[in-house]
Image 1 (cartoon, rainbow, N blue to C red):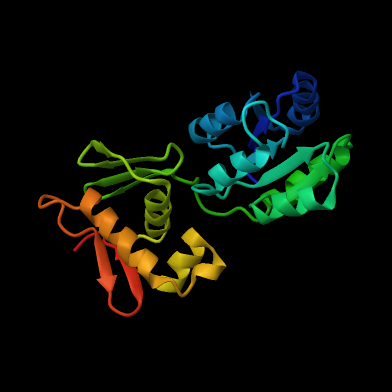
Image 2: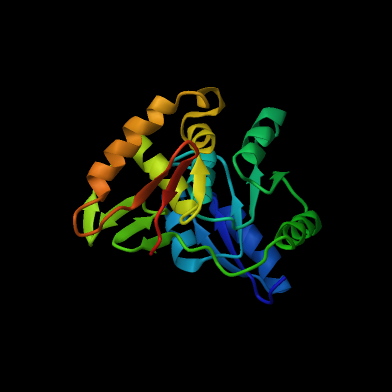
Length: 228
C-alpha cells in the first residue's frame, strides 16, 4: 500500500464525514469529501483517489448508480459504508463492483482493516477516464464522445457499445461478448442488434478524414482500430 493514500468519502452526512476523517487521518490517509453522488464522481476524476468509501443513500442519486458510473472507467477499490444491512443490498453492491461492504455503525479498527485488504490488490498506475484513439476521444467519466474535437451525440445503447470497444481498443471483441455486455446474457444470439448499432456508430464516428475506426472481424466480432 502506498504511503499517504487518498481516500474519497462520498456521504451526505457531515457527522459521518467528520468521523471518518478523524479515524483515517491519524493513520496517514489523505481524506477528500463529497456530499452528493455527482460531486463524488467529479472528485474521483479530479483527485484520482486510492480508495473510495461510498454511502448508498445519497440525495441526488443512489449509491449503486455512482458505483456503476465509476466502474465504467475505474477499478479504484470501493468500500460501501451503509445503514442498509439486508443481504440483497450487500449482494447488489458487490455485484455492481464494490470490493467490500460495511454496515453502520462501524468500528474504526474493522474499517481500517477492510481498507487495507481491498487496497492490497491494487497494482499499476491510476485509471485514465479519457481515451484518445486517433481522431476519436471518449471521456468515460463524463460520457462525452468527440471526433476531431467535435462532440458527437450518441444514444445510450450506442454509447454502451462504444464504451466496450474503447475498453478493449485494439483487441477483437466477440459478438457474444458485446451482446452480453450491452444487452445482457439473454441476447447472445441476437447478432442483428450488433449489425444495426455498429452501422449507426460508423455513420456517426467515421468520416473520410478519420478513416475506418471500427474494424469487422468476419465471423468473430469487431475491433476498435488504434493505428496502422
